[in-house]
Image (cartoon, rainbow, N blue to C red; front, side):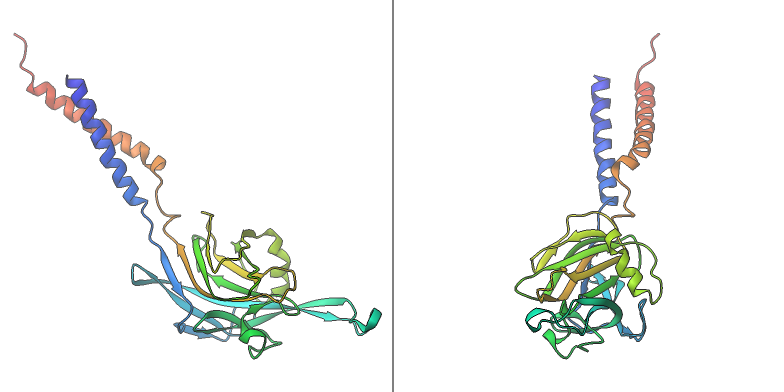
Length: 265
């Protein structure tokens, strides 16, 4: 009878302890809105002089963090010779240049050195004569992306999203682009609201169009991520502490039971 009661109380204590461990693992989602004004702007970024912008992140309505947006563009240059039937010659080289970020009520875009945001869908991220790349710097390699929303999206909806951890060499746009094949490919979708299925953590998110030159374009209106995932203690990691606590609890209960048992004459 004693052992049945002891087992019942021990299981109850375990459930309470696991409940506390689960509470320690509770995560808080941080929301970023790119349709309003940034909290700050800068004339420099990791890739050069064009404009970057920093936006606030809110967790449960409280400002808790920020994300900085900047980018670069690739540009194809063709040979002067003409092919058959007067068609332009082949691309002979590609250049990469830092691009300033821009924003409006539909979200974030880029103003490349070529279009300056004045044509081709008003500075949206696009792939006219080469792709644009919008970079979201999260400030820490401990962010797990949750979702992205697009306020402006072409009919083809052909975007791609990559995750990256590591250092950025100031001004080394070409090197950054060349290393993209080592980045984690997170999504290539056609939804205006993208929900990530990864629990990996990243410091940078890179958004671009697919490399198909089909004149795709988009603006990013929002992003949510979770910084708490990496710092949460998983339940298996808490088990040694849990078992120790249960042992102490059980010993205390057993000792109290022994004291309450009348001594045999």
